[in-house]
Length: 478
Image (cartoon, rainbow, N blue to C red; front, side, top):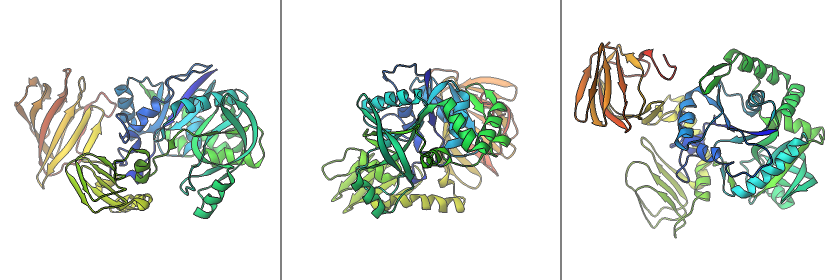
C-alpha cells in the first residue's frame, strides 16, 4: 500500500483581501517565508520516515488556477502526479471522492493548500500514526489542541482513547460541533475534550468510496460519472462538467464523518496534535504567527511606524507611514488599501461581497495578472489607450492571435523577443519596437534563457481580454 497526498487548492481566501483575490487567492501568496502556502503544503511531507512509499501529490483546483498550480510546483522542483480540474466548487466530500477514484489502492491524506504547520516533525509523527490506523480501515482526522476559545473553527469531541502509537494517542470521535458562540467555545476549552477541526483527513481510498457510496449515493454517483467521462490534457484532468454539477455540495464532515459519529462507528478516529497549526483565516492570523518587533508590530515592505503598536502593516508598492496607530491592520496592495481594526478582520469578507455586487475588478483580479506564459501589469489606461508591462518567462510564448478593436505597439526593455507579425517572423532587441496593426495575426515569444520584458501600448476603442481571437496556443486556449 502507498500514501497519496491530495491537496485542495481551490479556496478563495476572501478574508485576506486585498492581497488575496478570486483569480489569485491566498494559497498562491507568500505570507510567511520565500514559499507560497501551496508550495509549503507540497513540501510538507518531505523527510517523512514512513513504512510505505509516498506518491507524488494529486492537486484539485479550478480551471482558472490550473497554470498557477503547475508553475508554482515547477518553481520548487516538485513533481505532481495529476492536477484534477473541478468545473464548479462542490466542497470537500466530492473532492475527496474524485481523488479516491484516482488512486483507489492508496491511503489518502487530504490537506488544504492554505494552512500553516510549524512543527513538521510532530506532524510527521501524527501521519505515521494515521497510516497505522488507516491500514486497519479507520477514517482518521487530525484535531488541533486548542489554546484559546476560538469561534471561527469547528470542533471535534474526543471520545475514549483507542490506542497509542509512538508519541501519539488515538481517540474515538464522540461528535462534531459547528463554529460555536464565545461562551460555548470557553466551555469546550475548559473541558479539555474538544479539538479544533483541522480539515486534514486520512483513510484508504477504497474505504472512503465504500462509505460515501453507502451514506451519500448522489455524491458518489455524480463523481464516478464525472471521473469516467473526464479527459486528460497533459498534466491536467478535466472532470465532466455535466456530471459533476449534479453532485450535492457537501463537506467530508457533514456528508460522512458526523453520520458515522452519530452511529457510534468504531472505525472513526481523531489524532490530537499540537503542531503550530493555522488556517490563516484572517489578517489577524498573519499577525499572530509572524515575529513582531519591540512594539509588537509585524511589518513588511517600505514602512515607517511612529508611536504605533500591536499592528500588522504591509506595503506592496510604496512608503506607508503610521503615527499613533494601535491594534490595526494596514495593507497596501498594488491597487487598493485596506485599513481595519485587528479584531474586525473577519469582516473583510463583507467588503469583498460588496465589491462583487458592484462588479468591481478589485474583487477578483490584481493590477498584475498572471498567465501561463508569465504576467502583465496594467500601468496606465485612458479612453483610447492602455499601457501594459508584459513579462514573458524563458521558453514561453503567447498565443497566435489578433484583435478586432485595438492595435498594439511593442517596445522591448529587457531580453530578446521573437515576433510573428502576419507572414513575418523576426527578432527585437532592447530599445527596439514594432507596430501591430488592428486585425493582424501576431505572436510574442521568448526563445531565450532570460526574462523578456515588453512595454505594450494598446490603442483603440476597447481593451477587454475578450477581444482576442486565438489561432494557436501552447496552453489549450485556442
